[in-house]
Image (tube, rainbow, N blue to C red; front, side):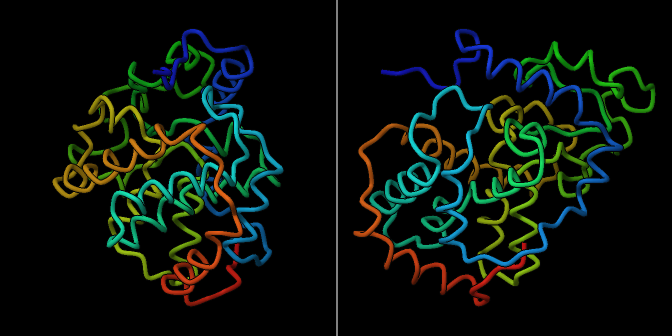
Length: 255
């Protein structure tokens, strides 16, 4: 069986991505990017198709078009959980925030996410590259809690900027009807240091610990559907268009 998230035996493309990611994801830069908008409108299906124009340099595993990954994840969830349509839709759209690659460098869009404004956990992939980040040496930021209080909750923590945070805000802005569990998955599905290693339990609220279980459930689909059989778009697109219409009353989303 193939090993996933093998960052030891990966190529320089992935390592160079994380060096830049860890260098430039600072408190100051994240605060600037949180107000980022693309000032355009697109349907969710058109966003998914557009993802094929981009390469995710953070991912050592993915060898199929980005849109195929979206449909592979959703179809496997659909097979296992046919009654849970919000979970199926979350699988389809979880990476749609990568549309940001139209305007931002990839190290602000993809890759594992992590809190900024406090000590970087050594559970974050390529932790050693944080020595190039100016916040690493800031005494206000390099303690366990940094600028936060114990168990303040992840919603009150500033995270490295990414497609996760961006898509979460697009969903909120466009009045989507997905439940909080879905929005939580979208916002934190790249937060591997927590959902694999519990590295930030000291910042997590009780609600975070509960909702993170949904992210852990989702991750087996995000990882282990890669390189499965190719999904025939024409066979499934009508089902997903109906699902999108159910949870996104606004057809053309403001990005």
